[in-house]
Image (cartoon, rainbow, N blue to C red; front, side, top):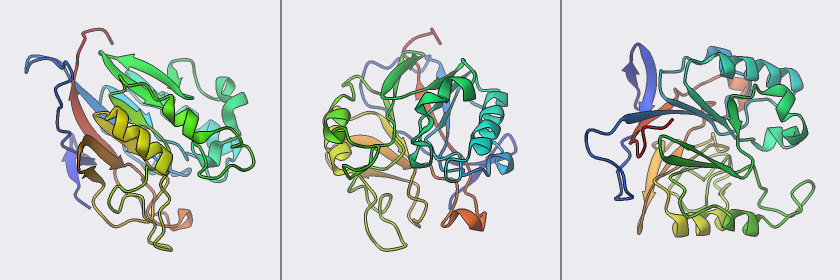
Length: 246
């Protein structure tokens, strides 16, 4: 695990390669993005580096406990980042009707929605099972097809399929990635795709796929089983602003 201290806080810094998508010159504002995922109620043990945008990719609770969610919402609101984004993980699948009461209004809870910050388009997708069961009865393939082409930073809980070891669980050697998602990512080609869900991996935290400029980053904080309390540091990367408007 390659960690670097930024202002006294350990983090995993990812060098995101900039594609030519209308980004500014070297005089453009640097937008610092900090990402967490799969904190599973260990959030109070995590020091978060400063930045412009703070993202959580879901599974901030253990098994969807309400008191975990309210504790996390207080923690997240207290962070000093001007912009905050959350998507829901499989542990929070039931949260949609309670979101407005749990999170403060300034937090962007993205439920298959986009938000633009400094001209950068962030799209958040709620958790979608690989299987058509239970609460996941709508067509996941169609829902992933709704990811817009202008997406710069794609935020999902589960990983796409076929991204090196980032989607393969060491527990059983099987992929926990979603092939429908991967098909859409290869079409949209966002600058960055951040996710979590798989915290049983020992590869580097990021990868790229041949023929696609997207940087894929597994941002899971918990390592292995939730009960072991072993934590990775937050992810950090920089992007160039396309607009002065936050």
